[in-house]
Length: 456
Image (cartoon, rainbow, N blue to C red):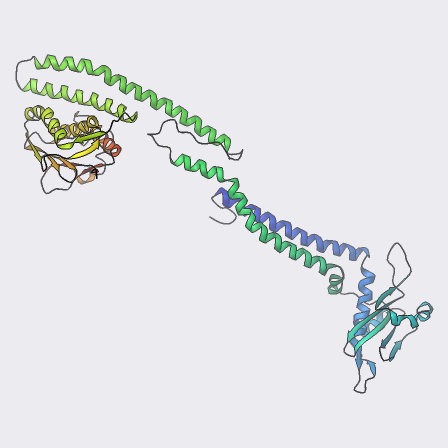
C-alpha cells in the first residue's frame, strides 16, 4: 500500500483530498507570481521599481566623515546609475542642513525645495491615467550617515528582489500564511469529515460480520450510506433474501422427509421384530434403529434451528440412567457390555431434558456403531458436571480429531449414519452454555465428554 494507491476507501479519499489541496495552494502561489510578472511586463510597476532602484543605490552611497560631513562613496550601483540613467540628478540633505547635489534638478522641483522639510516621502509627478516616470522622488531614509532626505531623479535597472518587495512580498506572505492555515485546518477537518461520511459504511460492515447461517432474515441497513454504496448493499440484501428462501426450503424438505419417514420406519421395525430370532433379525433391527435415529436427528436439528428449547431443572444422573436403559438392548445385541458409573447420586443442572437426552443417545449410538462390536461401553457421570461416553474400539485418528464434530463428516464410508450425530450434540451443548470434547484418556477407544455449567 502507498500514499497514491491506498487500499482503504477512507485512505483513498483522504489522500486524494490532500493532494488536491496541495495542488490548489501551488496554483495560488504560481498565479500570484504570474500576476506580478504580467504587471512587470505590462509596465504597471516598472517605474516604481526603477525609482526605488535609484533611491537604494543613492542611500547605500551616502556616508559621513569623521568630522561629521556628508560625502558619497563611489559604489558600483551609483556609478552604474550615473552611466545609464539619462538626466540623472539628486539632492541629499540631513537635519543639520548639510547638502550634497549632483546634476540639475527641474525647475518645478527647485520651486518646492523649501517645502520639502514637511514631506516624509513623496513621488512628484503629474496625474495621468497610465503611470509615467516621476519628476522626482522624495524620501527620508536611514543610511550609514544617519537619516537623510533624498530628492532624486533618474531610473536605474530594477532587480527581481525589488519588484517582489514592491508588489509581491505582502501578497506572498499573506498567501503563505493563509496556505499554512488552510493546510492545518484541512488536515484536521478532512479525516473527520471522511470518517463521518463513511460512518454508515462502518455500521453496515459490522452488521455484515454478524450475519451467520443460524440467523435467517438478517439484512444490511441502508441508513447513513453514500448513494454510491446503496446499489451494492441492496444487491447483497437481495442475495441474502434468495439464500434464506433456498435454505428455508431445504429445512422444510428435511423436516417433512423426517416426519414422513417415521411411520414406514416404525412399521418396518414392527415387522422385523416378528421375524424368528437370529443374526439376520438382529442386523435388521440395528439398521432400522439407525434409520429411526437419523429421522430423529433431522427433527432435532429442525427443532434447534427454530429455538424450540425449554429449560428446566433436571437431574443428569437420572436422565443418563434412562438413556442407558433405552439404548442397552441395542448395545447388547451388537455384542457390547454396558457400564453405568455415576460418581454422585444426583447432579442438578438447568437444561432441556429432551435435547440433552438426544445428545446422550447420539453419543451412545456413535459408540455402538464405531466401537468395534466388542468390549464395553461405559457411561460415567462426574460430580463436577461431566458426562463421559467411552468405548474400547479402534479410537479416532489424530488427523480426524479436529473434524469429527463437523456436519456430514464420517470416519468410514460404511453406511452407518450420515455424520449428523456429533454436530447435533455440539449444537445442543452450545445452546446450554457447555461443550462437547473428545477427551484424552489412557484407555483405548474413544471417549466423548459433555461439560455442563453447574448452577450456583
